[in-house]
Image (cartoon, rainbow, N blue to C red; front, side, top):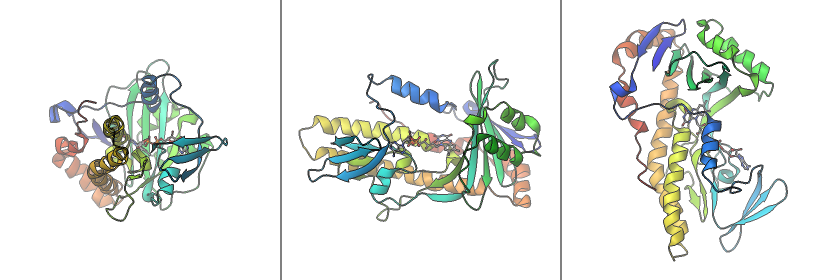
Amino acid sequence: MVVKTEDGRELRSFNFKEEDQSQEVRAVERRVLLETLAGHLPQDTIQYSSRLASIEATPNGDTLLELVDGSKLLAKIVIGCDGIRSPIAKWMGFPEPKYAGHCAFRGLASYPDGQPFGPRVNYIYGRGLRAGYVPVSPTKVYWFICFNSPSPGPKITDASVLKNQAKELVRNWSSELLNIMDSTPDDTIIRTPLADRWLWPSITPPASAGRVVVVGDAWHPMTPNLGQGACCALEDAVVLAKKLALAIKSEDPSSVEGALMSYGSERWSRVFPLTVRAYLVGSVLQWGNPLVCSVRNNIVLPKLVKLGPMLEHTNFTCESL
Ligand SMILES: Cc1cc2nc3c(=O)[nH]c(=O)nc-3n(C[C@H](O)[C@H](O)[C@H](O)COP(=O)(O)OP(=O)(O)OC[C@H]3O[C@@H](n4cnc5c(N)ncnc54)[C@H](O)[C@@H]3O)c2cc1C
């Protein structure tokens, strides 16, 4: 991993294995991850284009789901993994995610003849503005820019406008990121207001209600400052699958509800502290004060930061399935 200033000066470089033998970074393109996971399921398990329109509890504890195409599903168990704006979480009484004060642009640069970068995570720290890029395959490079904004701003769908806005933010930086952005197809660029939801005990609803449960961003949206949102969603899925498998095998009809509750309490102690920590890290990284940024660039990053303790949060053992 390499950390640089906006004018391209290298502040520090880290080797994950040297800092901590158990650590490595794997940058995975979302499409590849989803296709790989889906590829392990029997054919036709997933029904695509099934947008949920409404959800309703029935007297026997089943749940009636109505899709936007008008079709209805009567479900014994509902696992709501429908993202940060989850209609299922809303129905369960979760508050809307809270805007964190910064937004991110993301894009995927394409190099059909091969991308020229080494296998390194590159961070660039500016003032109230930070960016990064990392190769995700021999021909693709993922990049992001995170910037302060008092409000989430209007939704912009014109990809070329998004690209120009993103480029404008780093116009005066060294050209490396701008060149990567120039190799980025417009339609891969998105702008996301960053938001999270803090799961206060006794105030926020539990992860499950009866036989309906939420997973991933639907339950615990967190800011991406620790790079853990999707990782935690995968961990959730493994823990839930193990508990549900045991419950479904058991003869006790209430065991499914018990399994969902046990999933919620086990995962809460992992995801709540991470959500708070990600928010705090983001607040520090987005500081725009010139004096603070100078201390960060000249003292904290080059001399004080140790990578090992900063990666401790990524340690999680799922045990065997
Ligand atoms: C800038 C940025 C950078 C990030 N970087 C990282 C990182 O480095 N590492 C990391 O681990 N995480 C990262 N994350 C977080 C990560 O993207 C999320 O945590 C992750 O995508 C959550 O997965 P999910 O399956 O819960 O939700 P999603 O990926 O949002 O999937 C939700 C699914 O539900 C579907 N859906 C929504 N509404 C409905 C409906 N009404 N009916 C039916 N389906 C519906 C959607 O179409 C979608 O397919 C980052 C996030 C951002 C914004």
